[in-house]
Amino acid sequence: GAAELIKQGALVAVPTETVYGLAGNGLDESAVREIYEVKGRPAIKPLSLMVHGARQMDEYCEDVPQGAKLLAASFWPGPLTIVLKSRACVPDIVRAGGSTVGLRCPDHLMTLEALRLAGVPFAAPSANPSGAPSPKTARAVLDYFDGRIAGVIDGGECGIGTESTII
Image 1 (spheres, rainbow, N blue to C red):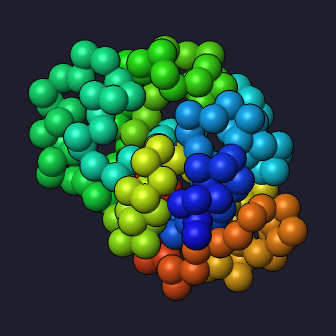
Image 2: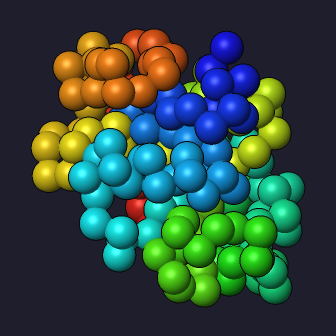
């Protein structure tokens, strides 16, 4: 399924509680480069990583403050991205050369399951060409990227339709 495709380096659009994301293996530099290319996103804009829970903070970030863990415990899964000092395992291209990375745990059961099965974090900006409206349905994603990505997890219409809050 989708988790296997992402593990193999393919791009799959995934539903979240906000908008559909264009997901690739966040630890695979070539998959991340393809996300930038498909979106037409400037490489100076870093990507955040989707994780399936707060336990993964220490895997991808160092010196995680207690406050960040409390925020994650309270608001994850949910539309909150927490920016922390990145570990070296997160590719430079994800961080756009910076030293920090944003983590987010999406509130959508299908995407959480894909994250758990894949065993890797997803780099997943909104699944739209840069500057175009963010898609709230699988159909809208296909209108943008049909034939250019491996697939879409159809999780129905996304609820909020705006991006997550960043701390």
